[in-house]
Length: 623
Image 1 (tube, helix red, strand yellow):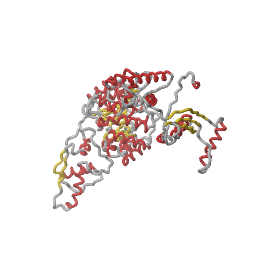
Image 2 (cartoon, rainbow, N blue to C red):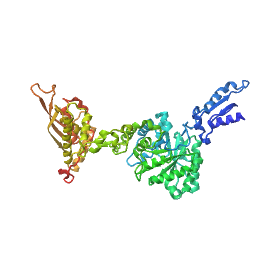
Image 3 (cartoon, rainbow, N blue to C red):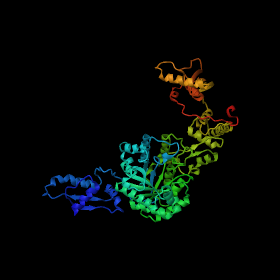
Image 4 (spheres, helix red, strand yellow):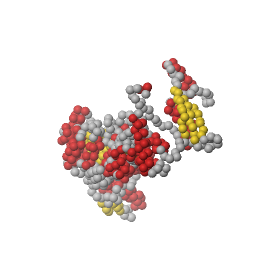
């Protein structure tokens, strides 16, 4: 009867509710879905999917009519996807509006920086930092954020627990919990690791499964049919718990080359269990683009209603190329990491994949496409958070990605920026840079003069002549061992010195630096350590031994300083002494101390980094 059907439906939607009244369901219409597991997806997007439900109240003669209203409202709310659920089944937006997703016209971006990326050597990230990175990825609008494996370590379990209260709803909808299929000889519902995935609260779960026959029989030592059941059972159970499930088919391409029939059986087992996406993994990173293209096209032809993903490692330097060719072959979900971090040589770099899809592969629908200008900032934010030195040569986002040194290139760029650039750097939040070096031409210097916007340097003929003089000086100094690629300020000073009427605000007359160390032998080092310990334990105000190891003296001549220079003098010589943690630090402190009275804006200046080069390696310290 209709009443029985309504009661059963109410139990399915919320098993904690006990139906004690009968209802007459007058109408219930929904757009048919491809499989029952998609019901919850269509229910949440009721307006978009044209779903409607109307529940007629019981007759007025019923003695329970007065108390039926709240139950009617609850049923309507559950049917429309707006009810409060207490069974740990999160509401999740549909994976797609059109099934299946096929590239290159449409692609979803799946970021695994916080899981696979952290497996790179020398990378460790705290739970606090993972939350910050997840927020930044959400703001950039990637579609999925694989945040960790909650069943493998306490940090990831803490992340998913804190995420429930510290991330906004948009970020929470993007979270993915990573795990694996159930163990051998146990049902999925009894596997602790599977239960932890459900408890994480993540709306999407991605589980890794073996798709290589040899890996099944010789590595995990399972029966081939048992492995298929492990895939099917694990996916089915997670779907029954209200999760969107993706399956990472580990060693997919190697497995396909080894035994394509078995690898495709693994795909079918995942689909039968209700998986939304099958991810083809080049786990060992040894596949070539033409192999990826051939295997992808053959595989997708047998699964016309299934969305596929790609997950590539960079062991042969082909991760980005393989990912792009897979999308061109129809893959709809691209997995990768920011800056390509990951185990061994890294994963596919999303900072290369996303701009390439947007600007070179005709990908019309990609959620983060509108935020492309923020990808350079995102790249550098991640490096800063992970305490990594940014890769200056990284495509699109590296500091050198749009840097030009050769004089011929710079001259052409002055006529058309497209002459030596494949895209406008501003489209990815980067900028064009003209470098000064011995390989530069006069146009490099002219470009910097134009950038400084100087009015008193002279007419065009004078500017060209002075640019040539500056260029020749740069080349002469670089032949002696100097380098100006990272010293734009030094070149700017040369340009300023060439302008009419320029007068330097100060001049360094002389300087000295001394480095001293009282720890000549092991006994002295022990005594010094004891003295430092005593300093830490001594009361405030007590004299302590200095910890600085260098002392510098700087003598400068300051010009045009009416507040400090006597009326009968044109300049003032100032001698200052300062200490530091090394000779460069001591010199910087002494110079700042000497100039600060005349130039107070320098008081906040800090020495962040410096570089020392041996000009003649053969002479070593004698250079």
